[in-house]
Image (cartoon, rainbow, N blue to C red; front, side):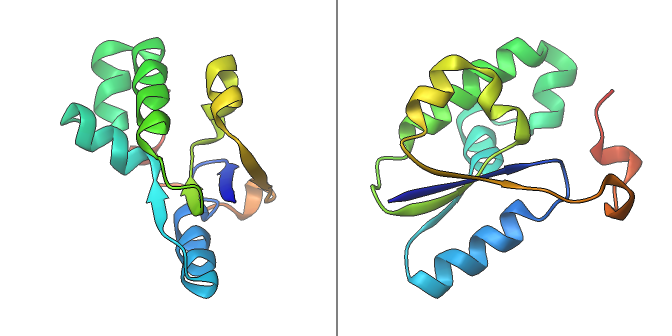
Length: 112
């Protein structure tokens, strides 16, 4: 089964995803890393230069590249905004919730 982790920036999707994947011995994928490999640019650069709608298209492409039926995938919280992405997310979707006051967000990591 695929396990999709979603939530706010810096909530720990990648860190927790890696731990889960290691514990149950399945592969881990970070959607932002896959998007960077596909485009040659970071999500922040893509959104800044080309806009969120273009980023969402790349996000969908990246989701489609994950063909392993048993894996953990760290996604951005906005991945579920796109109906096609929701349809592609054929597994357990886990929303990692944290009090925003407890998040440590660096200004550079936040896109206005």
